[in-house]
Length: 487
Ligand code: SF4
Image (tube, rainbow, N blue to C red):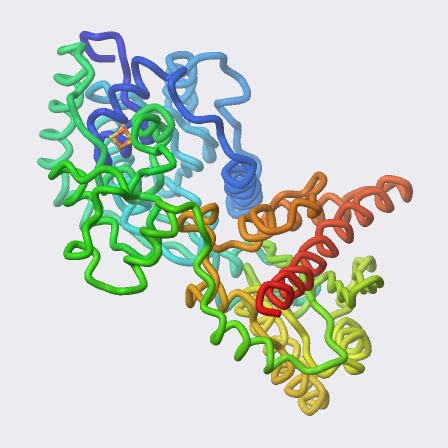
């Protein structure tokens, strides 16, 4: 513990690296943090679930966090378990130089302890490495019998075959070499972080690119509340953040200060005018061209994808994108297909997808990337359906393009052209009920598969179909809106 009484956790150290002010606020004014979004909560939950599953690599350990109430108690219990030479310890806690770390797994082998840090990811990011190097620094300085730390990630080549084999599902990478090179860096940075806390003054740091790198900062709401007004230049689409910050720090903070010379491009000048006049940009010719490419009969389609970190279906890999629901909306009527069976029904899904869409000459989608990926995966699985699935791909018309190309722009979009934002701006009749994002839908599907009560399953299925239907209805009605606009 430092002289200020604060210890620095891995999370707070990474905040220090991102922004000194974020670190200081996190330690001293935590109540100013933004509320955790549902998507972030779900990402944390997934990380926790994968970490728990990875304990199967070294089963039978004692979880220090479950037996203690404070980090100091956890560190004391860890020490006792090490003195007793316990072979496997989960959440082993150490404190060195005022830095507190919890190693996911600590395992004894030939009289030496090795730590394992689990990440629910296929790739190793710079942030993961820094986090691992800091853990290594603390472990090496607090544990005589420490040997190495491995970053454990999901193996993208692993294919599930009947039963999951934890040893094949995960792969590991030693950080020893690089971590030891970083010791002087951590000595220096940790001293700086403690000094900052001793000063007890909120660092005078203005908003900047650091607010988004490597993640959007938790204190965004606090620091940006005066900047994010309706007139803020940060609402302008297609402008590089670096350039916006340059202008902002030179005093150009509001859209009405953006001159033609600064914006240069004609389309950006039109966007600025759209904000100032609160009038949409309508590039009639371009919209007509898009609409004339739509053939009748037409329907809108949306798919929901399940992408479990730990494969659940035979023949699938970690994070493989598996479609589980498709909804097709054709004006008054909608139809859907939902995979309710616990087994692999992807080929049945491909057949149903073809059956639901084959009568239509055009299929409207909003941002087709995910749908195209899903169809390509189905093609790999059922090459005999190539003709039908290729035909479906060629019928797809991406409504997102109209907004991305600024054929239509409403100042209410600001710089966000997602279906939810476009629909809520243009179609007041569209309402999403419980589920608010694709990630939430995925979590609902997880719950569906785990539920053991038929009524509960039906309730979750109805919510999912309602969400997917709303997306396809919104896509259909946006095209309707565009048609009326150019009539
Ligand atoms: S929002 Fe930006 S300036 Fe404020 S604490 Fe976070 S990173 Fe620092």
